[in-house]
Picture (cartoon, rainbow, N blue to C red):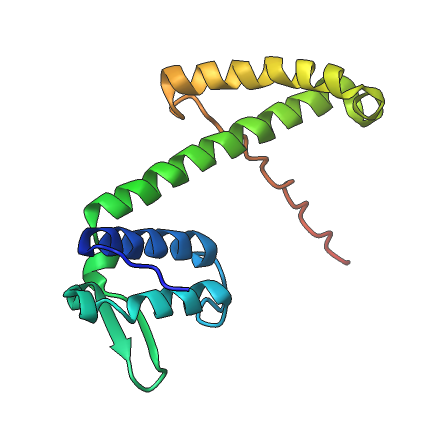
Length: 159
């Protein structure tokens, strides 16, 4: 198979490959040894041929190519990542808070007995409550209640 790209399309592909690899490997303990990193290396290997060598670096010892520091520090790409992170954070927070409220209100037994329709209807009311709150105020009203550890009783003296 042969695919042809214009210089602009290839640059977009490099940027997309960087973003996809970042998402797949940002929290991976061994990001160098997987199919995503290998494909990004392969894609980056053609950059010099299209006059985009400044967007990639090459490690001859490892025989791998990867996005350059310039590409990794690209303001627009970092804005995409930040927007994604913010959105995922709020979505996860909303669903976790709604789940906590469901458990508090109904308990595990009642939730297990609900039909899917009942569950999603009830959960939806909690989700909407949090969506409205975060849309209006962001996280400024969010508080975490920290329980203080129980005070240690002084040891009894032996007489």
